[in-house]
Length: 574
Image 1: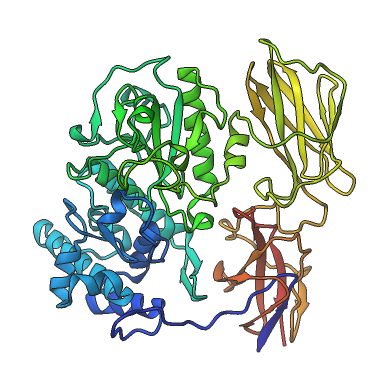
Image 2 (image 1 turned 90 degrees about the vertical axis):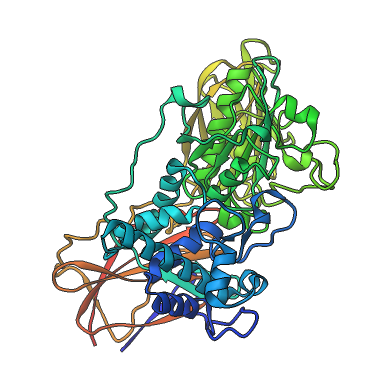
């Protein structure tokens, strides 16, 4: 029996297609992972999680930004010249292929990583006399894969890999192929969860301090008045690889901070009083703080996560506060906005484009305090002149997703607790010229949308951002809880019975992609069945078992996943 899902947004499973070069024997990326895991006796899910952590399962375009991308290759990030971790040269020797083939052939790259993992596992087992039996036992090998000779960074990398194993991976590659790692609990007692305190770094939110090589930055004694700019970069590479590159004497570059994509973890590498070599422009370097974020500019939807935006905003806001820097786009800039170019490594748009056109500056500045946008609409009440005791308040009102620049809500009413009101323009923009220092409350309303309330701590003399998203009562894919605690549900007689087909339907909130997660009850506990990625106006067929309880939940994607909806239960019978 097959269960038919007819939804407001659905996507059929896509046939896998080959993207390999050379004479690879696998016909899909998934087959390559399975074959490599079997041939070298390494856990397949761990192999996928490593690739996901390093490259998000795509062979990245390595142009634009020098950095660590110059020494890491392929979907598995095999390195050249790293002090530890998987080596491109060693893997090529094991497989009997050239380094060029290993760097460019996806299947060979995966085989090479599996071969290197097996070699390191054998070495570890020989030295310790212990066997790697469970996924958690592989933690020392996973830490080694980080490719950096620092125990704190190795542990951080391994925690990231295992976190993906635990939450699961359901990825659709650029050629349409889907790669899945089912969520599973992993016991990894050897990984430390301790982080450094505020006394160990300039920023209290730092997870660890890993020093850049002393020849990659300039010792100085900068303080308030010496620093007036924050420069944001994209590494064109992985979190651990970027840290290793700054610690490598051969790189000749550094940054003060590196941020991780998955959760926004922060590593400091140069003290703020010293001058990091990050901008390719000596004058900018001398008066700025440089921040590298993990990822690739050509895939912003994958790498520029909400967690990283939130972390970046907290770090930038803290820096601006400590050095009395205005948090606006004149002082918080991208690498592409650095003036001048020297050779191929200087700053400026003719040399660099990071963080790229896909970077959501509007959202970042809405999380801190900053200027941007164009004024419009109409305002009434309150004062109009900013002074030392007031700051301006600006932002956008948008439908469902505050990140969606196309979803501005016109003629929404924004009311402040001091009596000022504003009617948004056609883009959803609002602007209050003078709002008293301290916390002000906002009420945002529009016919057809649920009224939202928010608050903002207004800083004097600054343009303070606070965008707001309004939702309609029919946005069925937002809100609710996750499905991580489904155990314990007991089927009851009020569950609806369906057969031979089931129609799952929810209101379409305009998101480009949805996910439907399906669970079944085995008579004792709930078991995860599958997560389908859905697109509008299509259908998904999947096998169903007669006389079985099922549960499903849905969420939407638009620059980030919404929370899962409430669970919906049904009994399937023929």
